[in-house]
Length: 221
Image 1 (cartoon, rainbow, N blue to C red):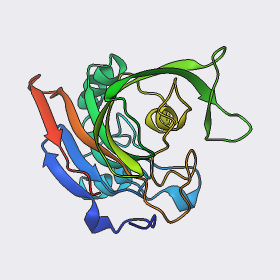
Image 2 (cartoon, helix red, strand yellow; image 1 turned 30 degrees about the vertical axis):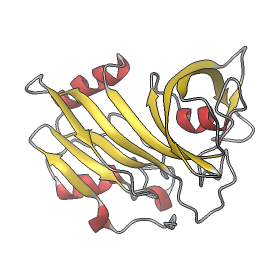
Image 3 (cartoon, one colour; image 1 turned 180 degrees about the horizontal axis):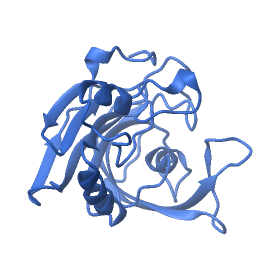
């Protein structure tokens, strides 16, 4: 499996670039945006800004977890950032992910609707809370399986923190009861494992042309 070391800068693949947006294929193990402290400043946004001096200071309009790989769009201009952010807020952006989860199940697919919140005593872990939690919704489809794992396509209908990881790991019948392979926070993954979750599809309106634009990325697993 891949190692969770910070990826070399040359591995930040730019799939599309114009004067308004940049779409990348983020490697697992690289932060999407800066974290807290000097040790967490290396990230996709910072690397793009070094390549593109005209890019705004805060170009990110959405996030991927550090150990999630795949498609991300960044804004080059403030106007593009406002337009893209509005699409994400209105849930007008279509996103799909591929994951390999621990375990095998018969169901071919379905939807998960699970209320959860931050565990303030164990940040950044999210926990199920039917009273105070905020609802996260995900559509899922079984793609194939081995004797011990299942490949799943996730389509998030909301954009909550750790949503796919929580929905995969949460016990049935509310969740899949099958943590994502390599997930050290919600599953049996250990430090040094790759988390098998990849953003494979991204569709949105281009901020300048207002035309539908979409991207695909094959999972590296």
